Amino acid sequence: MSGLFEMLNKINKKPGMYIGRASASDLFMFIVGYRTAREELGVEPTEKEMKFYGDFQPWLQKRYEVSTSGSWARIIEFYTNNEERAFYRFYELLDEFLQRDSHSEVAQVKEKVGNVKTG
Image (cartoon, rainbow, N blue to C red; front, top):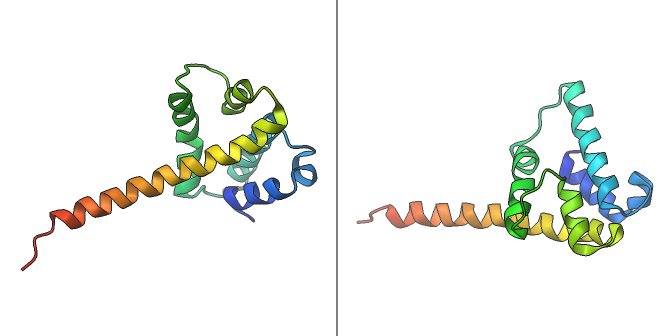
């Protein structure tokens, strides 16, 4: 079984094959269903997947400076005014979100290494 990010890569390449069309709302619903199906099968999400599920929405709300009960798909659609553009914008934002994690990890490592006293 593919992990979430492998599925997202496949969907990005061929949205029509997986979700019918390039739509942020349809992608959102696919992810909800995908997560539910994996939970029903007893497949544990990875740490990276859990960060996405728990942190992407709040990160996006902070990035756009909005407070809403609407989904991340609706937020992106609001700022792109188009479902298809919102679909592709999601992937740009996902990359930014994931890079944020890698940058913070690098900063933590540098901080730890900087605190180590040598010779």
